[in-house]
Image (cartoon, rainbow, N blue to C red; front, top):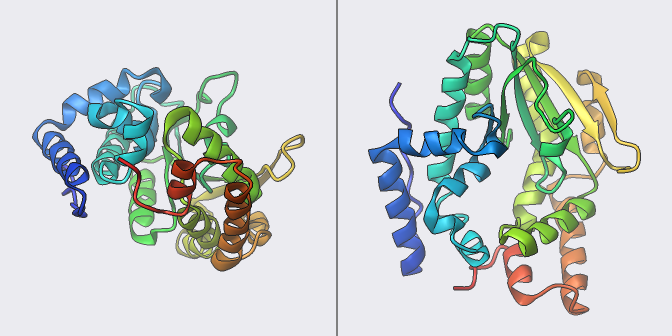
Length: 276
C-alpha cells in the first residue's frame, strides 16, 4: 500500500512554509529512512509505540531546539501523521510474536499522561503488538484503523486517559518549557469535549469487537482503570467543548496576568503564531 498523500496547509510565514514543504518532500521521497530512525528510537519501543508527536523527532528542522519544536510543530504535523499511519500498518502485519494479539488505541487530552499509563515496569505489556496514540475524534480515520486491526485478527482496545483539564494544562505548560512543544487550549478542549460522542459512535459501529478502558486520572494519587463501555459516561464529567475551553481559558489568563508563564508560553497556549 503506497504512502498516504501528505496534505500541505500552506503558511504565510516563509520559514514555516519552507519547513512544511521540505519535510513533506523528504518523507515522500524516502519514508523508510524516517521509519528506520523512528524504530531505532528507544522511546518507540522498537516501533510498537506509534505516535505522530514522536515521529516529529525524526525531522532535524523540528528537533533542532526548543524554539524550533514550538515554531514548526504544526508545519511538520501532517508528514508525521502520514508516517505514523504507515508504521501502524506495518506493525499490524508483524506476526512474529503470536502472543502479541492486541492493538491499542490510546487517546485523551494532551497532558493527561497517556504514555506512562500504558507502561508496565518501563516496558509495554507483552500482549500488545502495537499502540497507536492519537486523536480518535476523526471518526473516518479511526474507523479505518479499527477495521485494519480486526482484519489482522487482533483485538482492538481503546484506552482513554481522563484527567482534569487544568491538570492537563499544567503538564503541557511544563512540557513547553522542557521541550518547546505545548498544546493549545482549543485543541485540548476539542479532544476532551469531543471524545464521548466519537467513542459512542464507535461502540455503535463495532459493538463488543472493540474493548474500552477509561483510565480515570482525576485523582492522581489514586488512578482508577475502568474496564467496559459502561464507563463511557465518566468522560462527560468535565463538560463539553465550550465548557472545557472556558475553564482552560480562565486558567491560562490568570497564569499570564500573574506572570506565572512567559509570553511565548501564553501565545502557544491560545493558539497564536509561534514566535520566530
